[in-house]
Image (cartoon, rainbow, N blue to C red; front, side):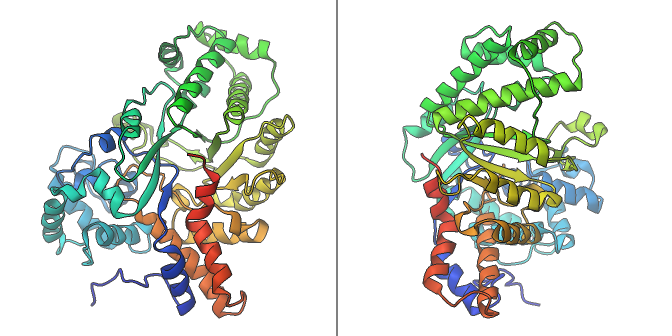
Length: 466
């Protein structure tokens, strides 16, 4: 059995797909406009001691697979050695066939470490030693890893109270990759979440505002938006189960906030009114500043209460939610558009049942003012795999203009996740190449190649203003 699983034409099934990928997509720089990388690690140019620290630590995709196989938590997030955690991941990898983890694993080993051998129990010791040796060389620091994949821009995600000290440090340096940030104010929105009052104290402290009313909350948020803008930020992001939209008055939401600050219970309708008001205020402000706004919709989070209590959020206990999305999302976007305060917007859905909803929703608010002003984002989280990406590309093609699509992002915490851009590009080129072969598209490589280059890089380059 050959171990050269990852080769030049991986996922490319005919000569047209190969030509599109190699001539028009492969060498395009990467604009990763949404991820959860650590700006401190980039600023400090951290070198990872071993592959567990850069590849397995924090990766809940891998953790879920290991748990399913029956690996004990000790070897996942527990106190076992880094090597034992890697060996248990290596044991798991052969069982991940047909899960995107199998493709990602071998793409990442190939692209970062020039390792094309399949990872399994037999090869684990050798691969552990080889990656450890390479990671301890200067070329494999955080900055080195970003350069290896031709990253041009990476945009991390920070809370409004963040000092952005590491972004300020990076803005004074030029190591060949631009690092920016996205404003993530979810904690200021979710009034019913535990610790909300304490968070407002921290937010007020960072803004120099005593938050005791809705207007003072808005004052604090706008000051932090201004601070982020002056620090080079041009994006925001919101992680919501669904879009909120209820009619409200400012007196109502002021009263709701004061009830919360006094420790009084608020109803779900009151929470929805408050969340709507904060979101509308934020989005109108984003429009004023010319930012791009992103909405990640549809995750059902922290399902396993026992394990969430033990390990905390973002540790692998989330799934797809079946929330109703269309009506409230339409009302929310319409409320902004009716005032001509709808900025560039990217909407991501986690439930594939909402694909057609999202693909048609964006067309309601593309008003001709900006090319691709309202975008349906690439396959996200459980959908950033071959089938999910293909369905997203096909649905967007059928109901919108795929030629205006701004392409892929990692949405990852790992410095080894950037081959997901390559994965997406190969899937895109194979999809188009197959249709050329079948005569459903003309053999016009100049035009279709331009479209591939645009989706891979140019559209995002023109969409974001950094």
